[in-house]
Length: 503
Image (tube, rainbow, N blue to C red; front, side, top):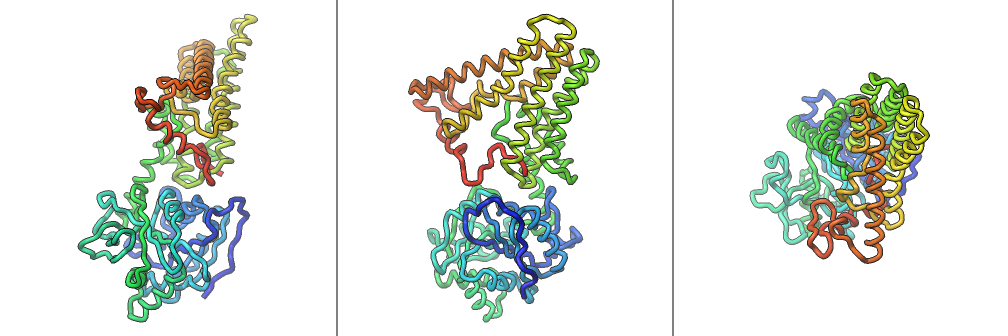
């Protein structure tokens, strides 16, 4: 029976695919539940419950309507999903599977009345599947009457291979499925793109006393209506045991420090520290936006200390500047772990970075003028401060005008914020903050002029190979190997994620 009407929250995102996602959350999940002391959908994994992590990942793929099948402790699980509907700005319908104890096929069948004649995604609440895998499946809709399953051919990368569901293939057609297959080609990720034909297949399996989802899939296989979509290389894991839960946690935390925009200092110094700090912050209710404000506050405290013209406070300011630089990486790490990417959060982060950069520059110049009231102090300080703004502006304006990200070159990394802040921090600790400001300003302006000249040559058809080859590319090639990949990966997408950190 249907448990509630749709829970709808305001949503400004248009779904990429006009279809719902059915989430099976009815089972007791005994192996994991006994260890966690709660229903499986409520088990937490790096700051999110399994229920919210499943919804959030599909939301990033553009899905805005969900059908959740309940069973074990239905009311308790429903309340969790109601909170998720509000937090993630989506619509959730609920249905209770009366026969959920018989198997996940019976749970899936309960969603038939809400799905109607539409195609739909189907997943289990304990299957964590990467966004790239979801998008690849969405890009390959099934033919009428058919079902598609995302499969992984990389057997060696699958956690707990013995417990995984195996798939045998003939080209793209699935010919057999089951945990006990001795000969198989790929693994079942638990993510399906279905037509309502699945429900008929489940009913046929149930008529023969088989109530598992695999039984319904076997009926589709028998009619040659089961196809595979290769998602190899895109991570996934079935979190159904304490061991699998620990592995999923390890994988998510291992990805905290990964960013395509890191400079030299961020990669070598800041990220190893910020990733550890983010693991601690993930145990709290702090949002990425709040962490952004924390980093901004540290920078403003540093500016206040720098303006005192007192060497002792300068040392404290240098420490605060580097702390702010480290915390600046935590908001994005928490956003990635909690799947809270948004352009609004990225915008806030960028604006506060610029305000704090200006405040630090003005404070250093003010202190220098107080100690040495030369008419040249403010002009020099102002030029250095302008370089902070131009370093960000030249990159973003390039992306706006040319429709692609600025190539990740050695010169480009020299103007990034992590290096600027480290130089200012060192200058402050050594008692020469204004010297540090001059060094940063001269270096940044020099790099910007260099990049402008290089860009002018490139766009005029005179490609400067050595200058423009992305880091790691072969400068002897007629075109830098990887430049095309950099441009392609940075091209705008319907749901952009570069730079985005949180709502």
